[in-house]
Image (cartoon, rainbow, N blue to C red; front, side, top):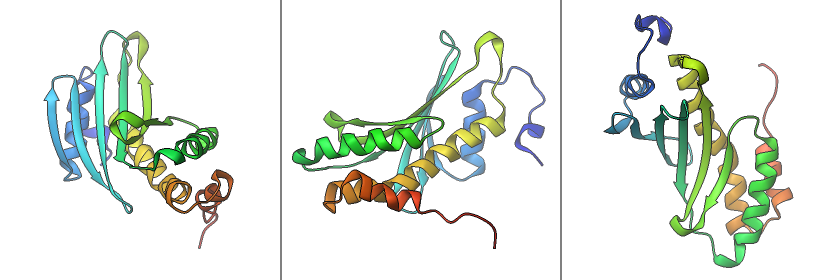
Length: 166
């Protein structure tokens, strides 16, 4: 059964949908308030902190997926160069470095202007895309920060994905 088949109401709050998805996947989550939820999603490389927040004013569902990084201060320019190169490859969402908090952050906003409603599949895809992007680029970021590789060299790791079918 598709996720959307479980919902018959047209005006279901997007954070209610996120809560259902988190519960369905057995993710740890905390409904911070009516318009915000935080959860932990286990990846191959690490556990990612994901927060989704709904802004009725902006009609936007905002996703933030973060993980801690503690790069040496002298690596910040290379890290920023790598983030710029990574963002050139991202179709949706973007990475940013929150230095004060020592967090790498992937952000995405789903604009639902004009009373549009996000489907459970859209929200599930947002969460999956965030985790997949973090997983894809995590090794490259580590190579830049700790492996003394140039951003160009490190990104070859992320680009070297298998294509096709077995």
